[in-house]
Amino acid sequence: MRQYQVKTIGSLERGLRVLKTLEEMRAASLHDLHQVTGIPKATLIRILHTCNQEGLVWQRLADGAFVASLRAHRAASDDAEWLGEVASPVLEDLCERVMWPSVVTVPRLDYMETIDTNSPKAYFDEVVPVAPIGFRSHMLLGASGRAYISFCAEREREAVLRRLREHDAPGNAYAHDPAWLRRLLTTTRSRGYSVRAPEYDFDGRNSIAVPIRLHGEVLGCVNVTWRRTVMSAQEVARRHLDDLQAAAHRIEERAVSAGHRLGPADPGA
Image (cartoon, rainbow, N blue to C red; front, top):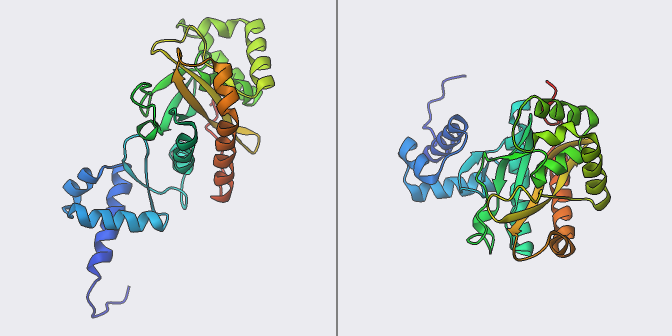
């Protein structure tokens, strides 16, 4: 570039330093950014707010971490983070209507991984602690896994089941039972949502989940979680299924408008 005899713009330099730091760290709290950049927190807040308004930065609901936007440029390995970014504002709206916490999950070979949750903003968060980011739920016992298995492509489903059959772990025996699998798929598809298995009760919670679908593929799932003793799954579905399905549709629409091109990683790879 030609050497111009002008001063640089200090505020722009600070903003670019923050963006570069976020790209390197992938996710960072306000304190993290202050420690790494040396920029005062009050200034950082203004920079982050401006970048958020311009679609360059977003804030994760689960832990409040700031993340550089992946919508403008992303690779296949970024799909889960990109889906979390697209889904984040929808999750925030969902908890205002439902009040019970929700999570968004994506398939990871033979389990579902939580990528974001509105738990910190949900009214009933204190009585229903939700699994953190990175939590792995069972494909055939968890509500999200059941929604994915029921609505994904047959090629993907068979790849997942093949992996489950290779390991002797709780719940994996169902992968060897064709009649059980047919009942699961038929029931879940007919009602449009999945329910956590009764024996998958390690925390006193229950969940229902629906798929997030695009171009014939299941990108992930979104659920609603509540304390099992408060309501039945049928009652929660009666009250909140429309809200849950509307949230999934909004995530799908946002994915299309943001220019989604890539599907989930091939479970058979």
